[in-house]
Length: 429
Image (cartoon, rainbow, N blue to C red; front, side, top):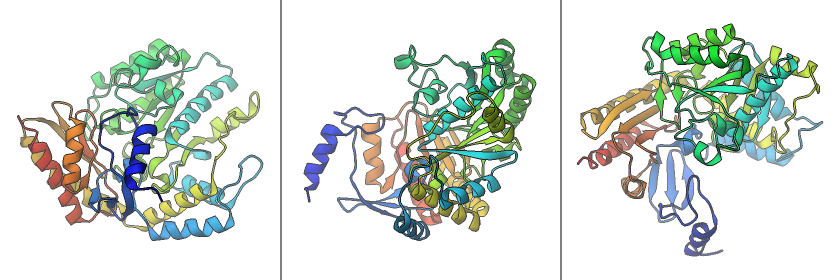
């Protein structure tokens, strides 16, 4: 076995980490193991994970029930192609997803990641209008400060300023961007908030296939929580202008906001929904795009009579098994009371940050806690401070935020928020 220093040298010289340069001097920590809500580093330190591995490990690490389900499935088969073949984990997972997502969503397309599920949703929308005899409907309306993934289709509907448009603008499809609603969660949606969407639909509606939004919570684009009334009005406008509605529930799905799916806050059902991240409890990469009978029948009955997409690892049996086990664990738990408990702990722990001069805002919803600073953080210094404090928190831009595993206990949650307050306080000038 190679020495740790040699392994880390390979990592430093040859592995790209997310949004990093190969020769980046940002700190990278070697994880030896993980259990419950804790990451164990190779130097022996243990960190309470406030990120749930980018919001996916909702049941914590090394979860016994999921482990057992995967071990059993591995003895049968780890993978089989989905073209012309099927298997029980995919069928049972599909039924489970259809049972828990709102009607009339009634068909599922599996892919490998959230970004790809968004690309699939966009292709479905364009394909649908092609089959309807409206080939000009090729563009998408998206909210500013939104984030939908890093593949080309998904990237094209991410925020045009904070995203990667400056690098790939000439290669990406040109989409229509509207203003982010300023009506906060729990507030009324005003005419001013919805006017940007109204104008875009009037101006571009004939050429627009769908509006795509992250319902209630704009995630990696800014962690902004907006009014459920906005979704209601947006849904009505889309129907009025013959435009499909896509909800990106990749970050918000599976109870993160206090509802099983964020769209339930508004009692609005999209034409297409994307789910991922927490779908497998963070065990394996899997995403799903759900749609309605009208959409899949229209595509099936149009030309060429099939939907043109098919990942190699589509509906991987291990991933489907993990997802099925994770969903059952969630549904069998008292998840609503648990999310309320976490929300209360985040409120108690983080609202004191509002007294700090360097803090612009504190936002809490469900198992999401966000402290927005006035200035961007220095990642080179703040991440080591969190590690030294015994927590794993990875800010971006002006945002110091947490989305912990749902199994986090009150003492660990208090330890996490206390560390955040202490370190944010130390940034005061």
